[in-house]
Length: 413
Ligand SMILES: *Cc1c(COP(=O)(O)O)cnc(C)c1O
Image (cartoon, rainbow, N blue to C red; front, side):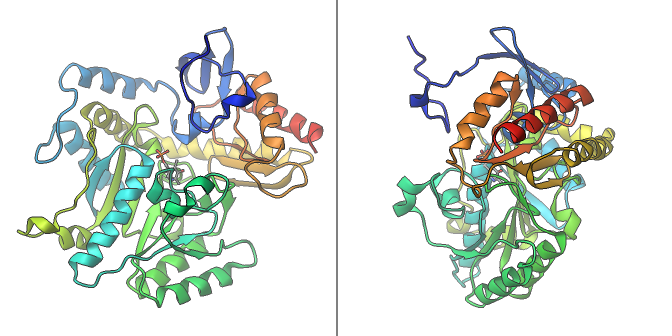
């Protein structure tokens, strides 16, 4: 019998094989049929240090001996306190409040709700959200609403709320982005949400830090809340702990998830500046922040995050990230026959073929099978191939990835 599992972003009708993974270590996945797969995309952008990082695994095991899950409304626990204290040490000092949830999408939903709550509680209701073209913020109705519209969400479009889209700051067109943002800010929107420096699911497109800095400055001038979705870019992905750092930007609201636990277990936080918290702080229960999910701040997930924070504080993670960036850049530069090679920190991407970026490009499934046959976990976005490996990946594993991309470029040119 075939499996009853309905997999995410999978067209089961194509009959593609779905390997069963039984073990992971470092940058490798081991399948039930005995293959060793190189995880070139960090298991969908979550694994930062490497699979089964020993300190994180030990923290999970130790926490499982003490406390599993408790309600977080009106109750607290030590692992959550440790994560919050650690985030206050690591993240920009202006971000004084930590709200827990359990996925990147939820972190973004929380950010949007915080922004609207802030404005309503100040007595000047605002609800319009500004978004950046090609953005991706998750797959729930709210996060799809603030993300790019396309094949991903055509069926749900009637339910998505209206937003104002600022054009992507493509090379040479940066001023148009800033002008559009300035104009949109005059209509007193609630917030702008962006993926800082690089849009991920939208095609791994980068833009310069000075544009990010100017976008934040325009928002500040118009008192529009600036929400940084660092779900993908956070925890060293772009070469710094946060991508915003490279622009000297401190957001009003910050969304973190994927690498928060090193990628071991699900957890998310939305951090906010003090005025956003204070707008909800009152003796009036009607002004509290109305959001929770059952597993908010799960203690075992928090223990993993606390261990990740300890790794960041005690080990040379940024040096490892810089080293990976250098090793990847050399291989990227040597790739023949690819279009638009680009890199930011530990992320590298190229385009293949002639057609523009199109998620449902005919090339996609062929590339997927091509890499699967070579024991590589790569998952192109249409005809964009990107590499986003765990920071511990070694030279031989990188060589295997880039040799296969070179071969693919030749075959599918
Ligand atoms: C992955 C991602 C999300 C959604 O996170 P989930 O944990 O998959 O819900 C949101 N924003 C960005 C930028 C992402 O890359």
